Image (tube, rainbow, N blue to C red):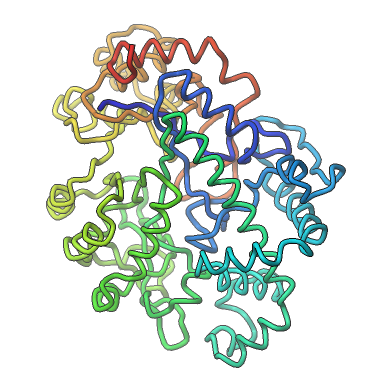
Length: 492
């Protein structure tokens, strides 16, 4: 069945309070998808944002982002007094993370103080249902206790190394603080699952994103050092990245600790299976970021300041996905197979049978056989005009050279800049790919002022873009519905 959807992160919704949330605007967006003939809503990782406000550098691969909790919903449920609301930042089209993090944390802590007396039984049940929650909560409480510095730098060596007696000491000392972190996770996932239920009832699938790597400063590495390539002090030995190329003479040093795949294989990849099972419970479809890392990964000595001296090492390959398919046969995966794709990557993707990604903006190289040109797509792929990591369609056009522009115009059959975003959307929907996911920025015809992220950069306007109220209107829904009917992605 041919399907279409929209890529829009939760933070980009025009919710009150300065950031998109799991509240009314999320439900309105589900209604807009249904009205538009769309079947899929793709989001970025919903875990707590980390360094540089990136959802791909999180303190936990399991926890939900407390910034996405909807405060009006808490008021309706009697968990927060009505006067406890955050101030609305001036710029409605941007997320001011510095303001939001401080303001929302204060309100959530007041919500905990206001309602914790009646939450005990529910929180205990939540911890039993979510085995990761207690460790994440204690990690977060200790991290806050030490001024939010990385756990690698915690001054108490015994708690860094998770000595049993010291764990008990901090659990008792920081009991109330840890309980707060359980509380906000309970709130987050209750709101998330209610939204998912609402979407699924209307035929809308939630399409999530799982980063292949975890952040060094995370509860995952602190709790499970044996899963990673670390030394006797639990400090990374080798880290992830990509080698030097045309865009970066030093390559990219991501800093994430690499997995100890030999250990994972001995344990039947249990840690990964648990992670994927959890993700399969909260999403209907799962994009596995940096799929090529399962075929071969770039290993950089952690002591190096650049990626120049890294080496390619074979990943777990088929043995890993054989276990995944056996343990999680119903897991619906899309492979992010962009980047250094070689024969080993191609062979692994064919073995798995997962759809890969095709990005139209990458295809205008002048080569008619370019795999990202729509005429070259196979059915088993997910088609995008662009991703969160590259320019919008209009932004690409404005930065492209004249030869590329003319070539793109010929491929799309247009002659004016004003037609470009619409032509890209139409060509993606008309392609053979069985699923087509369109960034909301391209649907709205926005330029790079709405770009979500520039890879390998920190700060600036990364991750900040938000829709404006009224962007998802009846006229736009009708236009999309007509396109979906025309291209066989929605019933007449």
